Length: 379
Image 1 (cartoon, rainbow, N blue to C red):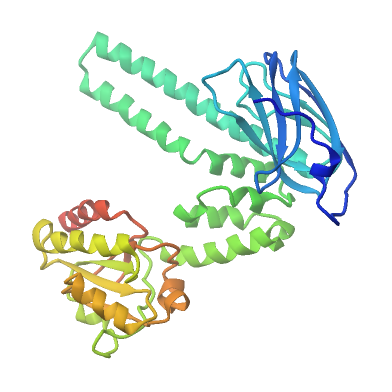
Image 2: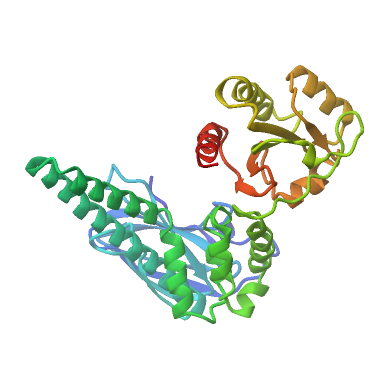
């Protein structure tokens, strides 16, 4: 489906302040027929024009400066999905040139916007990081193929397999490495926190918090910077080896919860809610783990409810036949346990040792037996 230039009546909202004329002058080598679009963050199309004979040109009035999404579609490439790129628009002229060899790479964008220049620098670094990983993967796979044909050397084969695993691991951290390089090149950048907000920084809070500390004062003071800083400063206290937060609340019979009463080597903390069907269904798996898969003398469970109604909580415990320790502060979304343990979804699972030091945070239920067996074998 082709997009055509939208009229000003579709671009402007009633009473919206205009921020000046904007022009997109682009070249897309290799694309004889296609479309170029700009969408806002609500996925509404603001500007659209056909790409014809590798060229496109469109103008309009910018509703407001900020982040937008640019899409480029090649009609002849039926196997591909649309290519989307984050851009920052401030008005004026934007000259755009896509990569002739790889249209998935971030285009070269020339404009008067400093923020767009920095955005281009980051995404170019990210493309380079991903390209390097792809090249290394191809080289290692080629060596593995040769080893397989030439010899049955287990040592050489294992070395290559380990290298392959290492590169795959780097693929998952490509955004971090690109941001790290970007921060060194642009130490005073105002958009570093915005770029980090697009990464899974909560999965490895220690290294991301260390990088966050190098951001400019302006980046840290932005809304995204404040949110990330607050979250990471809390999450670094929940890394493996750290002393776990206290569990606040009472047991169903009204007694304060006493963590020292749990005499186990390793303990699964189950954060759940009575109205959450996934956590309720998972309780049957917990029963199986406790009785069948794991050594109950060494392994224990504590379920922490993020409920607000006592009757719902108590009824769910009975219905799910939960025979292990239960605790709740009955404050629902305002639960101190949810805040202290950084619970953003239900269910969430932690593993702690007998001294209540964190072993693993936010793990999948299916991973629990692996973690437990590995820990008990070492201890």
